[in-house]
Image (cartoon, helix red, strand yellow):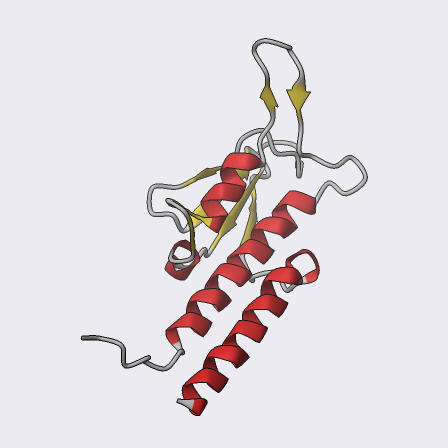
Length: 140
């Protein structure tokens, strides 16, 4: 039982380091595809995934390709971490107050694209670490 505990503790420490360090972590090597027919921009209004979930349309000038299926296996409730970011990082206007919430950062225009890459990395690494855990032998 000591070996199982050690494996769980080591994996837990790796997961904590990975998740706490999200903002400074490695970006997954997504391919940036630029639409040269329109002026380039990092600005996000509302991102969307393609039907096969391998590509994220950031805006009309930028798409990020090469999202691995494992990125969707790490879930936060009923959706993946990446889907949560896509949902939360969009420009919205409250109907009652008229206040607009804009996640874009004028001082760091690439922030959201970098965040997407980091969330994909954390998701893939989390799935891999959890898959590598030893069986607990609790099945009845």
